[in-house]
Image 1 (spheres, rainbow, N blue to C red):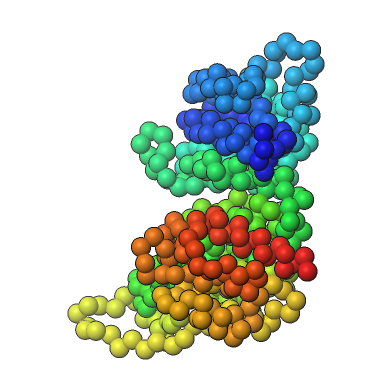
Image 2: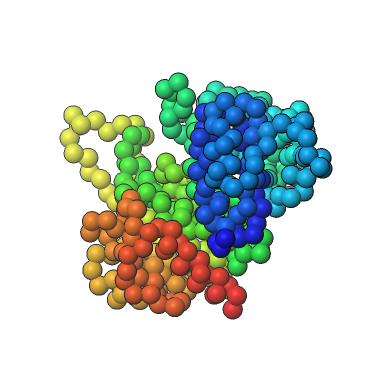
Length: 397
């Protein structure tokens, strides 16, 4: 089978949580990308999804019994055959076992023997995720180099809602690719990405901002991480979950974003400025809430810092990629910004039309400066891939 994971052997551990049904999609996506998938289930997991489901999806027998008779020691063989292991869902119980080195079933025994990359996708109720014991166990695993994917916020079992929802299968598969991407075309590089809007306070409850969702910058960060880069993502206010394997620095204002970008610039090989920074901010924000009864406020605005221009003036040998949102004359506006802000590449997005621009799932955009691409429609993932293709070539020069 061909694909980006062709020939790679993935051990998929499935534990006893309601999100176990999503693991079936993880298995299918891994297979579609060319991986050989071996599923190991805990006994509790088999009460949520039958082993036959995974056997049909992977074409391999599913193992769940540590005492299963085989010609070799089963947990040792399974551990040594895997290039990478991923546990999805990873319950609070299995996280505790992994942190403490317990081995009381086939999955925990296999993972204790496994010496390759390991990723876990936690899934549990909010209280269990927030419990000090769980937080300590997760930090212990992170300290050992385990990739922790999610969790996110959303509907949980028993009709509840909150933090603890398992990451989406596509994100889990991307984390597996990242774990195996040490030879990727961005391996060894530090890529600094900005995403989302900024919110400039008017008073204690109001702000000036824009409709940017951050999806494009998050897609670039995830793509770069999947190609082996160390990625720092400076994100304005957005509800998007952290991309797998990416360090995220959350900020609110343009001034905070500037400080975070400049603080990470020295160590960066390339900067991708996908954030839609507010152009103006109130000269002075009211300390409390402005009352409607007091009439229309006299709101005096001032420009926010031009972070892209400042980075362009300081970039040295770094590669700098900018973004522009335009409604007309896209190429002309893009070329002016490309030259005026010392960019190596610019992505010019068409905004104001249906299905493109802020918060849309697709973009109509052109790329200038490095293998120009004329205006066309892209998914966020396609555009992120095209950006990273050109970024890798520029860095290689």
